[in-house]
Length: 274
Image (cartoon, rainbow, N blue to C red):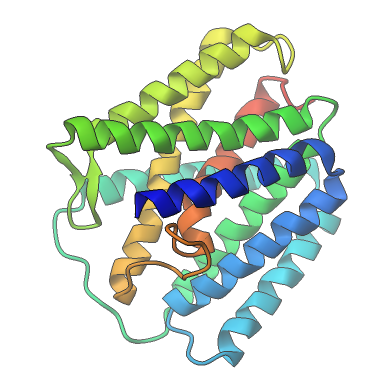
């Protein structure tokens, strides 16, 4: 229900903002790591890992991968992984938007979802953590990434309700419309222009930064669609029941998982994360 979503957001948003701005990078990494591990548990359930032991084993594997990523992923390796994820998310977004047949429900364990899910979770986490620790502008850039996704989601919701007629991907996520995409993209473009003009994160080039925000918002829609696909194939409405009105952790961070590596890569290429 809408009122549950609003109340949950009113509680969570100030906590997220305070955490990004006032926690140091190692502490923020720990908090985000816990969120990722909850998402990993839900991912395991969507991949049909039965009982408690197998999903928790997957959570343990992801926890080890987070530690390894933090300790051993060098900047060149991180950039390479971000490029890889940017290309993968672009292809996946296009494929899901173009899909025009029903998604079959599955009942068997899907190792490929575990492999992809672990890669998505870890790459997004390390991208956000490294961006946060990248100079004095790092926390502001991370906060802007979160705000960008929030504004895009809000724009998509209200534009879709007001003008939504043509379905974006009816067999993957019937509730999403092209009008919603327009609302999300418009919000992303406006956010990028305002951030560049404000000077809050240094002298960022306006046009490239605005285009990056549009790209990030488009990719974030792909993250939402991908999670919707996993839920439809698993035969569930939400990834979990953790957050009233919002579903599970993955239902809240699906867009961010796709957007984070693309945003961090773009910020790095434009010198905003130096």
